[in-house]
Length: 67
Image 1 (tube, rainbow, N blue to C red):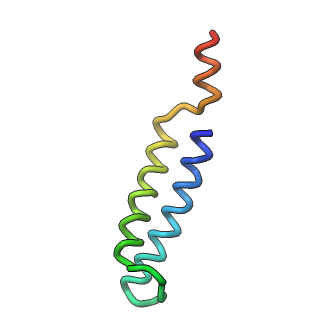
Image 2: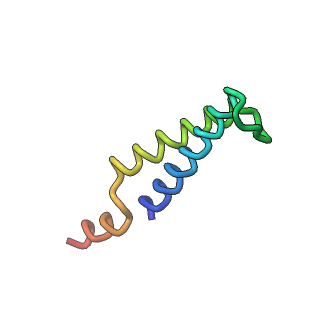
């Protein structure tokens, strides 16, 4: 479950980061502030990567407790 959430955060953060950067340089018109979109995209992207790298999945944690 944690890995699924991390993957969703990673993909959503990458999309928001790209849209924010394109909005900053004027290539794409976005509804929100492009700076806010880029900053939030960066935060979600980094959070998703770190969760994928360092967190065990809930299934693995439950299996470790039973052994």
